[in-house]
Length: 191
Image 1 (cartoon, rainbow, N blue to C red):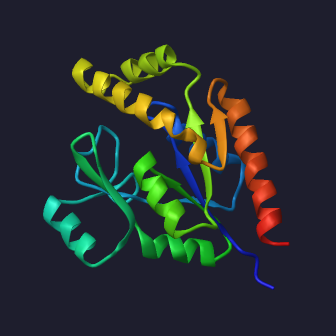
Image 2 (cartoon, rainbow, N blue to C red):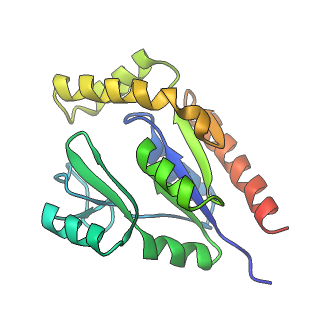
């Protein structure tokens, strides 16, 4: 019997540490991969096309939508983001855990069309901590950060639709909690 992989949705407001959590999980597990999203936003310093995201034009994005090439896609803070379907399917079919690190609306779409997906919402300890994390990044204007905080408040309101909620107050504790979730879900899916 082939071991089944998992599709894991990791969603959280911007600044909650989704990417950091995934990096730490991938240090302790060799069975995890991250789906690479496509986006129309400009690359941030240090981001690499094809590794961080597929940075594409609005026209390319629209063509992929027309071809039904995304598991989900959405406009977030003025830019489009989408999860290409085929690479995710290939990873899960190979027996690995594929993380989809996506925003809440995209997560809802994937959960609806993929009921076997495991969904985790990463919660900030509080809004003040989230604001400090966003400011510390030093990548956006004060107005952009205010917009992200408003979006975060809305996202947090619907966190109860996820299978699991993990508060990212202490990184190590959050990573261990998510690792335990993965172990339990793999047992369930492969029993």
